[in-house]
Image (cartoon, rainbow, N blue to C red; front, top):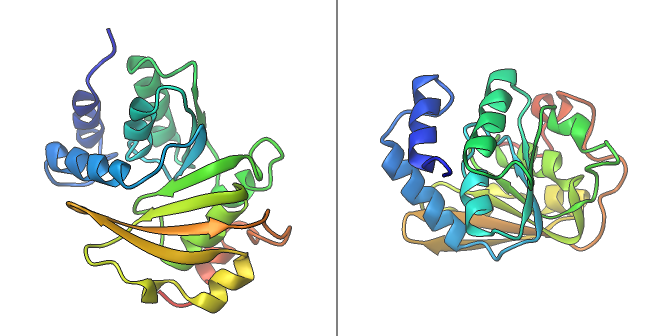
Length: 204
């Protein structure tokens, strides 16, 4: 029988792979965030960490395939173990790589109708690192601070990346910014590894 996600996250927290605060609260927030997101048949969780919200969405959408991306070896190993314990190994893949590099790999570039992100990076970095993964018409859904505001998302910077939005959605404890990619990303995005962090397209 698959393990319980709460137990898996408790283990992750013990190992220092999940931030402080009761796991039950973090799960409740992830569930609320999941309620804001229309299901997708194939999605990528950017900087998946301990697996929030990627594992929650994978369990909610039993027909979906998921890529859980994280550059950290310990977190990637945890995600592989979690997928096995949850019975997701046949439709979930852990991508152990920097986002800037994976987004240029033909296996991943332009392959996803949905990219999710929770506490990955400031808005400009998140948008640039995500855009290469999106298929034409795809969505980027980013967990936002309470009372999230569109002012965090610079229209000129988003326009340069080929993204539109954001639409701010709120449900219960969760707030999300939804950005859309009408077309595949320009080949120049994302820039080389580390450049989005060092020279973001707009200040955070």
